[in-house]
Image 1 (cartoon, rainbow, N blue to C red):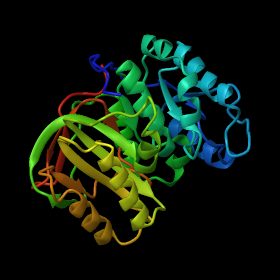
Image 2 (tube, helix red, strand yellow):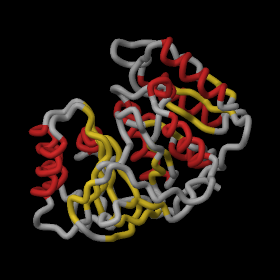
Image 3 (cartoon, rainbow, N blue to C red):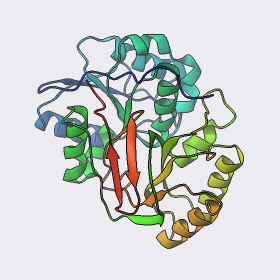
Length: 305
């Protein structure tokens, strides 16, 4: 599938006292971690509304597929809810992609936040509605995230101007400058979408990837799979987030360089986004500029209106 030809659909920015709806579209979660995350949101001045059936369990899933899809429908429809935040990732988001009412979501755009397995929803939402979504912390990860994670989450969703430049412990893997639509997320989830109606090419895009708990040879295999499928053809840029517990950093860098040896694609590594304690909120579906020589990733427009 090619990217939605619709203009990016932007939701309204958060305002003081806004209500955050919480859904569990993937795996169940620890109640204690959820309560800690809710307490943090309340301390930041936000109200919360839990989706009906949030605490249901069905093995390694947070309820049956239709129940989890219906949670999202209900929160997007609810005029009292200003944004939708996922409780946890894990497994199962792919199972509900064909059950979602994308016309309903497009008619009630709201900031949608999550990462890891939630990548499947980010990609499906943008492909079918043009909705700008947010790769960022989930309720159950807030208690173990650093203060900068919470600060950038609020800055981005409240629309305090275009974000950036993001300069972390950057590593320039391939030099260059580029601009493009910023998309991506969890590497394994992007691979799992290949061959489905929800996969698409990233021609002209800046692609962001992150991962956790995968050995370098598995990272290699996933990247090769994406390359063979044409995902990297005419890619504007590649940004590597955190690769937590994925082996030696230099080994990951080396295999990425080797796989892009035949390309002029600028590549920047070391952006603090993903499964690490620092998980900066990155808007997906808006234009960004990449300057790997300076180690900068800059968003060229606000992600909310």
